[in-house]
Length: 168
Length: 102
Image 1 (cartoon, rainbow over the protein chains, first blue to last red):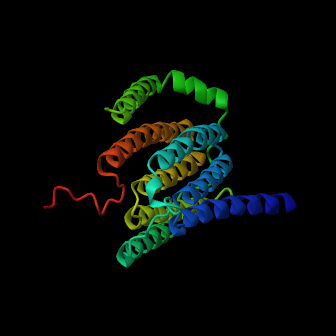
Image 2: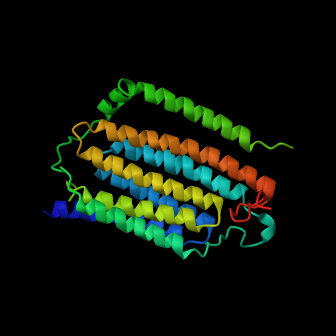
Image 3: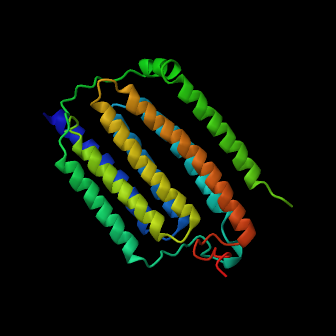
């Protein structure tokens, strides 16, 4: 019983971390601090993946998002800052758009209400998936998608390198 | 509680809505890219949560892994374009990028 309680507590902690980091990204008006909030959100989502029985996806989340995308974003922030503007060159203004926030709030409320009204066959029929069988299916059933996605990633990275190159 | 799908859906819906609010309310192209990443993460949470109750859990997990790879490609190209815009216009505020208007 206490074990169940502790598990619930850790799950809600991860949910709180995830949503809190996202809210910080929304409220912060400093680009670099927003990137740190995004880091917190990514780590919380990795924890939620573990609770959903997707350990490999959780490890991939930490490696791809925290180790790749976030580092790339911080490089982008540093390379695109306006150094001449002085001390607050990383500040960002929020657009004074109440309507955007309103639409987002309506969207969130609608999603949560619809999800709570639906009923799913959630009697936990799915078994816990071993990483070994995930690797086997990656190399057999999904091998075509894997190759296509690998080619796409290669093309995108080469294209990004070409786009970002200095012309002068 | 872990055998209930509703908490995952609530967290995912909140994350998606916050990501949308970030995209529409920030005057910075890099922060808008961050909002897109939040929305993709919300979708990934949904995929993983539904794969938990699927007789074949590999399907949903594969889908979320591929979504992550596409997100990596998207952010690389997006940041390259942002850096190019910064070099050309000396500005990454999307409201000031209106060269074609007049």
